[in-house]
Image (cartoon, rainbow, N blue to C red; front, side, top):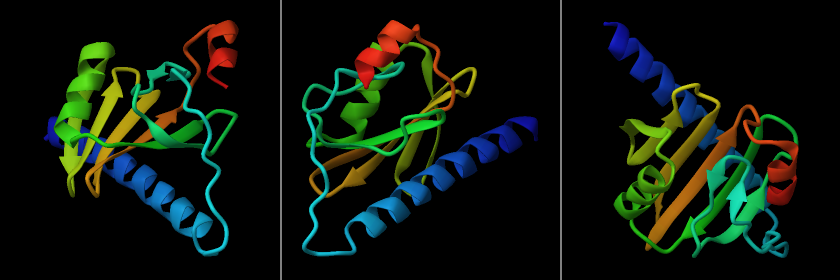
Length: 140
C-alpha cells in the first residue's frame, strides 16, 4: 500500500506539472499572430542534461522551482533511455496517459517525457538547485 501511495503521489505531481505546462502552452499560443520565443537550447538546465537535438526550448521560470520544456524528434522510449543512461541519478517513477515520469531520489528533479506528434515533449522541473552557482549560471 505504501508503494502504491508513493507512486500515485509522483504520478499526480507529474500530471499536475504536465497540465501546468499544457496550460501555459495553450495560453502562449492563444494569439495566432504571436510565435513562441525559440531560443538556442542549452547543454543543460541546472542538473538536467538537454538532448543535443532539442528544439523549441522554452524556459518558464528563472527562480526555483525552475521549469523548461523542449521538443525532440525522437520516440519517448529513446528519450527515456537517453535520460536514464546520461543521468544515473534519475529513475523511472511511473507512466500515466503515455507520459513517463523520471525523478531523482530526493524528488528535486523531475523529467516528464510525453509523445508529441512525430517526436516527444520533455518537461523539466527543478525544485532545488543541486549544482554550484557557476554551473547553474552557465545553464541560464
